[in-house]
Length: 353
Image (cartoon, rainbow, N blue to C red; front, side):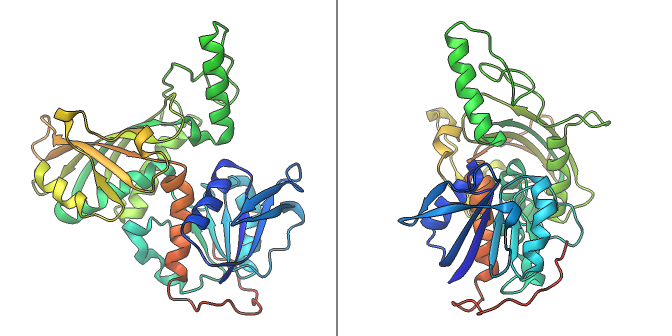
């Protein structure tokens, strides 16, 4: 049994982490739920009991085996090292530590070996959870690379409102209702109203012309796959879908890989489900993927513009596998070799950042 803290427990990802922990029967002896002062005192239900939300600003980080952070990069930079220094394994959902050389960036189905240095308890370690769009991409790329070695990847993403958290979902629903009523939508969360629109901007623009989201996908994919020179290009688009990110992906490989071979490889890959009967209109859909922890892939076909190219369509629930479930899987992987009961006390260790 483990002592577990959820930081950002009242947000969309934090609440989903609680759902996933309960569904997967993660062994919890003590649960601490933390949020901002404005949420402190509220209650959330978990495993049949109500838990009071604690104020993160006055948190005592000691005594936890695991701290899952779902509160944004600024909060993580400020507070995650405190929990790690107090002896917890910190799994951080933000972008704060993902590209740090000494922080593992992990998708367990892809690079669980990166957790070897963390050990069976992970005390004092911060492990980064990748960006949601990156997670579903690398889960599909990994078996293709192992079989035929990737030389180039191009991806166009179609990302749901839930990627911006509960506030993104609320804005989509509110502005869709306004638009249907003939009122003028007013964007607050997104750069333009998302209702009945596709926005080719997620995050700020960089000097290169790419957005922050697009650069995340490039940098994180290279780190997770261990391919620092991989040629990868991305365009990330926000679409008026509630939950579930979709990706159109083009890959080129050193060795010729047929669509049939790719289907066999992907059907055997952990965490992947192939849905590829286009003649029967069966292919991955965001609505069908919502609530699932699998990554769905279909429309697998040759790229007519490349002699060793394939084209694919990838879909996953960005809140679950793209955030909460992957974080819980990281903890499960680290603790798999740990004793069933936690130690009575934690020694303070240096946070590895």
